[in-house]
Image (cartoon, rainbow, N blue to C red):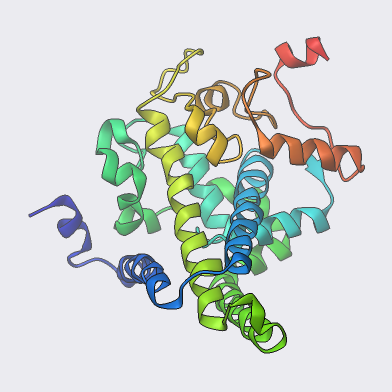
Length: 289
């Protein structure tokens, strides 16, 4: 019996929900062969990939999980909302797991480590286990003082349902008003929601799997974290993972001029506008500034 089968058999309802949900999302991408594609659907898919992906990298990760910069509660809420739309769990759940990863990196307790649990488990199999829902969230209690963040966690499913309806409605309205665009509600849902989400998933998952297997290790971190160029580009700077494990609270992960870090570019832009302050940086970067 495979490890995945053992994990799923007799699992709690949340695990079955994840298994079924992820299966449906991947299968729904095949509907693109029925709906076809249009320029506007592709633009929507890419736009949502960027917005939701940055919600995860800047909102969930660098702000909520590591508190690597300060901002207003409104901006924090908007970043967390963008991250919630990425279909990667609510903010409190996401932060709790990420902080646990840093506390137990590449040990048996790290449920998405390719070193101790293999590539499949590290990439996405960990979400199909009871352990994924055993995290009590005690390490994210500091975020409970924000009722708006708790609101996003509590209403996570309804936020996703609303997003699906909005994307479908967007395509349907365009089909009525601008039929020459060649889109429809179903086509927009397939490309703007399902394909965009699945692509975002796998890019994010690669930080856990690929970036603990292949890449450079300029810093000795005591774990298998690496800097991977491909993931660095696709994941808006998150692929400079060895840098991140050496400087976990840094708002900037791409520490060299050639290490593209789009998430840091967004943070810098918000700093320029006066919307972000006190961005944490490694001493080596502060001395060069």
